[in-house]
Amino acid sequence: MPKMIVSIDGVVIKEVQLTKDRTTLGRRPYNDIVIDNLAVSGEHAVLQMNGNEVYLEDLNSTNGTYINGKAAKKQLLQNGDNVEVGKYKIKFVSDVAGDGFEKTMMYKAGAAPMAPAPSSPPSAYPSGYGAESGGAESLPAAIKVLSGAAAGREVPLTKVVTTIGKPGVAVAAITRRQRGFVVHHVEGAGNPTLNGNPIGADPVALKNGDLIELAGTRMQFVQT
Image (cartoon, rainbow, N blue to C red):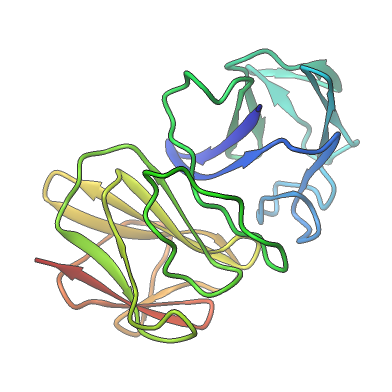
């Protein structure tokens, strides 16, 4: 099944499987792929699937849609093509089996979650929240949810990048580095906070016991 892998500055923030004949992309929250950035039009582009073929069509967006660095109006996507929308890069993967990414757990507000791969950790987020990750070795660190219906549950930080939050509302990314973990704000109007201080786009180092608040949910970074 084809999918789109969305990243910014080399950090994967979400993966969306193309399960419908028509998949919309844009800044507005009703799109199938929501990118909350002013460089992205409200209804920016559409992906149309016809059998094994996927066409991308720009919907007269303000800043345009680029495929492999070239402006595109309507084009058949090939496996590995890179779509550029604003500062975001979206990699098209025509066949999930055999690519270098694991399936991730993805929630969209008001919708049921897609089934994760067996190797994915169980979600520790209330309905409307998700955790996405990119491959890495296991590490003794986790995010513990302190509020909401999932309070007390933990999501192990076993991947290079783990994104937390609600797509289209607020998303933050926790990234593993050689000297520990860092967190930064990815998208959404409501900035997350770390121990009460706003988190911006610049990565901030995490230490054991740090408290993160994002879209009304309180979480704690735990490292042993």
